[in-house]
Length: 384
Image 1: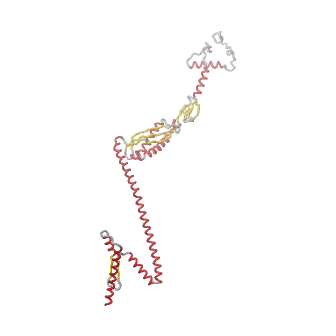
Image 2: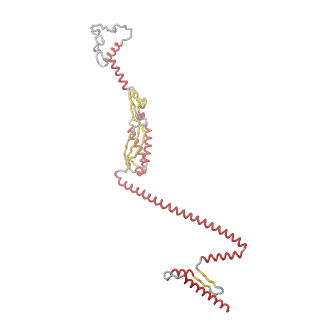
Image 3: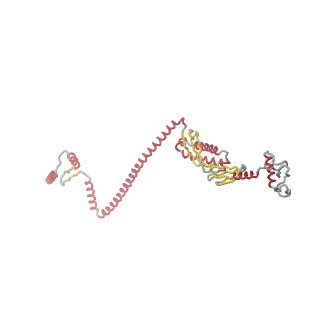
């Protein structure tokens, strides 16, 4: 009969049944009591005989189960955080810490770990019709590129960060577009609109503590509504013609103005040269007259005669008329050399060219005629 069967008097071959109550508790006894409690907890019947001791074939290794559960629980708490991630740890629902890259352990069912990618660049797109400063309606398409800058704020401080980002983008874009004209939003100030929108959007996100950092804001499309697109295209073409005509006028001005400035500078330089020449000439004349005064003081008659001869010579060099005054005669002969030259020039094409010999002969005859007239005039004067 086995020691643990009914009627076996519960004689433990290891001496468990005969131990002193004052000694240390037996490990089997502890396991048996724990097994009975677990069986009672899960609705099972305690194993063993009538006195509640465990039977030989009905016992279960609960200690092994507990060890396995402890090992699984310990392994379950390990987790890996990549280099581009951050982990937000909540302990019993309260913020505990933010873990960086590496291998970490947290007690499961006590801590809750949320991983977020800190380097991934995400894109948010928004569209809509908006009112400009000049009371015009414009269709705008905007793209926002952003990444997570603060994991704690992104996970805990805002219920829905993406929705907050979208609403903040709409608000910032409408504010900026409302301060611009239609032409500025569509063509002239598109870059400025995107920059102002990014600045205002970042202010909103920082105010809301979203943990989001805006990288780039692109105004991908901006145009008038479809209903007025044709009219707006006409306006755009008219503005392009205006710009083209302005550029042509500016090019013409750039071509003409330098020429005019060059001519003006040339006239100024010529005037300066004329001024310098006249001034220097006047100074030279003044010096000459001063020297003539000195000579005139020394020899008045000689100086006066010389001045007279110089003046007559200068006048005779610049005239084409010759007057011959015969000494002792009553008449003065006038030779219109200018008229003779004109007549000779006009008749040169009609008459044959006169040889030099003929010219000399004619000149000799004129001289003889003059001498005869001079002799006759002297005789008539002597007779008187």
